[in-house]
Length: 231
Image 1 (tube, rainbow, N blue to C red):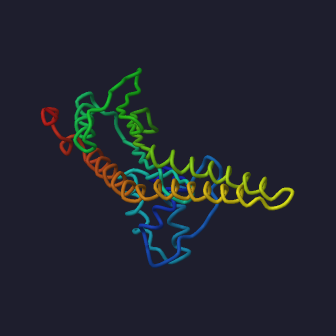
Image 2: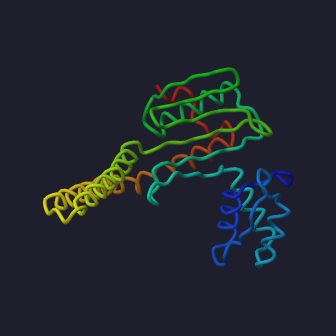
Image 3: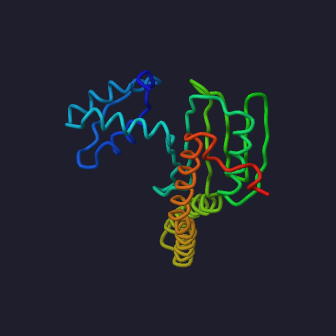
């Protein structure tokens, strides 16, 4: 792990876990390079974070994977997690992982393989197995499709409302057109609100599920369910 370089999201996660009492130091990372564990410890030392806390946080991050998210209007509509493995999964481990995915997400999904690339998908929910730096990499990701459509639709409706309002004001206020613009704006607000209501709990649930899957995966094949358990 000493030679590995951590990107900006990983650096933020490491310092957040290392200490909640002190502000995380900010440092621009060279494009495509990242920071090594020694460099993280040096930066942490500048704000009084013990090296062993940095090491422990970095190890935890490597084992549980790096979380990612997709936001619209500040709300999380997509979550993911990337896990770097120091080995290649055997066929048996991959099959056990598929069983785990089916049990965790409550759906059978579809399995595909193209050369060394494997994937399990169910709609917007995707799990990809691909070559990594020292073994293989697992990418888990999903998007709240209905909420995303509602929120994008709401933004489009706001744009229409603005155009209607400007048109109504050109050449003198037109009460009927202004009223129509307000109605469209209210509809847009409702669409965004409905989309936003469902994202919070959904994002927390999916993050927890992905974290648990990553933890079982990195602990080794013994922690994965047997293939028979999916029957």
